[in-house]
Length: 141
Image (tube, rainbow, N blue to C red; front, side, top):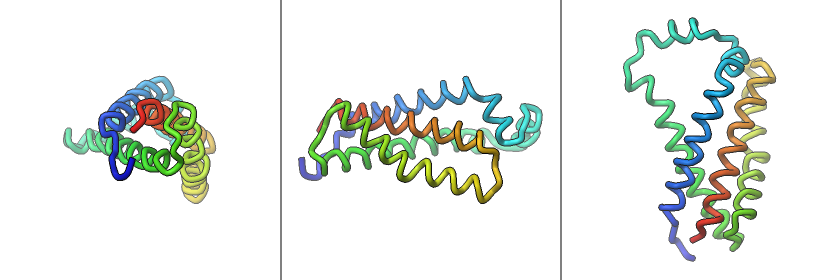
């Protein structure tokens, strides 16, 4: 295995996770905005003066983050020697529980965000990490 990364697997995982996020936040968009204390109208006003590049940057950033997560989960699975769908999903879920859920919960607590925002955002990242880990584990080295 060495230093070889299955970049095709990482790319497939990142694209799939990004699509999941698009569907997830489309379905929960209203609840997500409410949890932030925003409305559709306030978002339109907030984004009115932004360029297309500025509006696209969060979407690009999410995809780049998912690529990094894919390479990281590949490294974790390489160190465990367990490239299976199950091992990938479990590794993704452990990373989510230990690092992502805790970080989101702490950050939202300090900024006095509504608990529902933590629930919505952290559930999204659980799905993302389980998908990425599962695909990386399934596709193997």
